[in-house]
Length: 480
Ligand code: ADP
Ligand code: MG
Ligand code: ZN
Image (cartoon, rainbow, N blue to C red; front, side):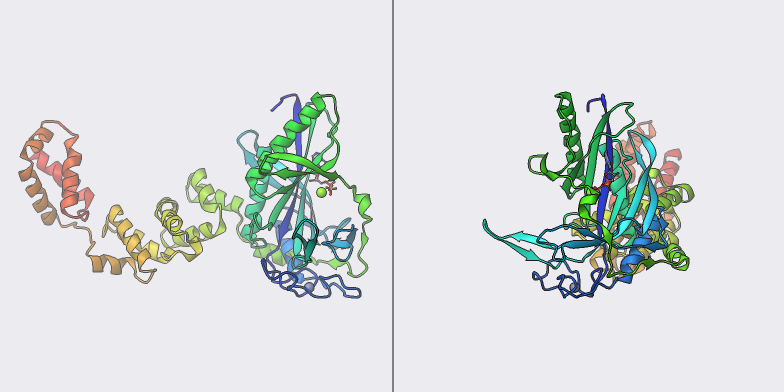
């Protein structure tokens, strides 16, 4: 990237909420239904139909606002954003303008390039989504209004990011927070979490911002990064060639990796915003805010801190385990039952995630529940089984669909570790007798052969000999 220019990025994120019904009517908002089957006079925009605000949407907005350090506006206002498009039957979108529900938030991000940094969030407002146009053939388009009136939160950042890397770090954290809260399913391909990136450049040291382009159609983290990087190069070229960046909306084309001009950018005054006379001001009491605050789950940043500072996990392990809430929930349950965090983390990131991946199962549906896994770990701890046999036990519990406990599997399959000195010594004696030459070499100082003997005993005992005991007995034999 050309070092003559500083990059400035501000992001607008649209989060589709997981409520059962739409924001201003009782219609279901299921994805992928028969076109126009999830509609009523309100979301069809029929004359005289009146919107009624969905309380759950407000609750989710407050939750998201608190989790991202906003103040909640005690009395916020819905406004009409006027524009014409065939997917918007009323001719306006109900949104919030001057008094959004959440204001002045922030998130702390961390990147390799610039370390820890606070990104300001200007506001979060509630709004309804538009319908969808389906371009059937060359000459006509169909309108599907199932998505009309679907509840959205729009989260608008300050122009505080200075690289694609920072933008991605911010977005990933926001994505993690809304999915942790359960207010959004986070599915970017289906458009549940979508982002517009505003990008400009300015010469280093210049106070004033450059003219920005707004990039749309960014439905994966990878595309967002590609689009921003392409756009920065494009703007540098324009300026270096003596031209001017124009304020416009550009579309990212994932196939070619370029952004293309879509339309000139509207200004807020083009939308003729005004308070919606059909909706009364929204009053949110302090009690309500405090109740929601008290119910917030532990968020990823707090989890990472607790895992590393209190449980002694590495930053890396803490990050992996807290990345998705179901994994963190599993780990939290496991570590309460078996309080050795490092061992729990190794199993969750090792055997558990391997088996889940192989079988394409989500951790919430893992047949080896935290209770069952804690049972396995307990048997390693009390020397009933070795760590190696424990993997077999895990597999057996898995294939029983979680209907067997570690103890049952160990009993049925005879997997109990042999810790009986006599039995192990008998095996050892046989092996020494059969490999007299090697034993003498070992005695003579060829230490590498130690592994060979231990391995032979483990093999002869089908992995059930207690390895620590085998080692100890070998030492004794050598000293004889
Ligand atoms: P609009 O709603 O018309 O897109 P806003 O003023 O609400 O305009 O800003 C939208 C986003 O653009 C915000 O995230 C803001 O941080 C960002 N932004 C504003 N100016 C710039 C700029 N010069 N460069 C990059 N981002 C910008
Ligand atoms: Mg915008
Ligand atoms: Zn409806």
